[in-house]
Image 1: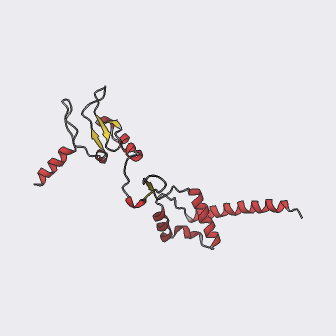
Image 2 (image 1 turned 30 degrees about the vertical axis):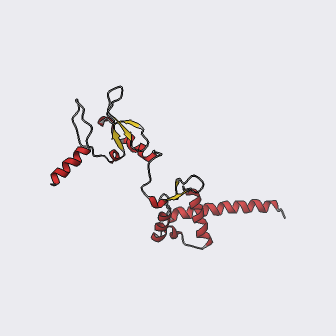
Image 3 (image 1 turned 60 degrees about the vertical axis):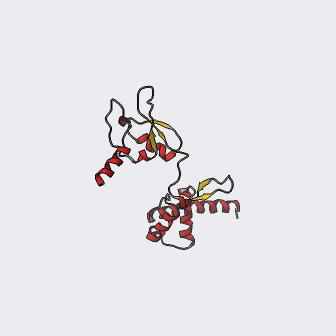
Length: 174
């Protein structure tokens, strides 16, 4: 019974039959998002199209699947896998938008430096496992820094503020 099941799955994951090519099993995950077209292009190459947006691509085995993987990443009509990260956008007509905004790493590092100075935290604070997990949970794309990087950032901030103060005091020549 299992062998019949495997054979039926294998036949659903093969290229469409053509007279001059042997059928083979498709192993890449990209084929879940693409379907083969019956009509070849002008050069006789096998074509496939995106199930979401209909974009056509060359599906010849010698071309590989890299272009298909890139398309999946940028396809505008592809649905999100993580529904928990989506909310309804009230400004438009009920469309979905990503809840996690893009993060500016420079701003994050500056805010972390300010927090360390303001609350008199050790530089090692940046390497606490709980803090790292918290930052990664809030935004998985955040670039976490080491204690040495944090120290360098605090020193840069100190020099910058020192110059600002020096310039301000020059204005008040005694």
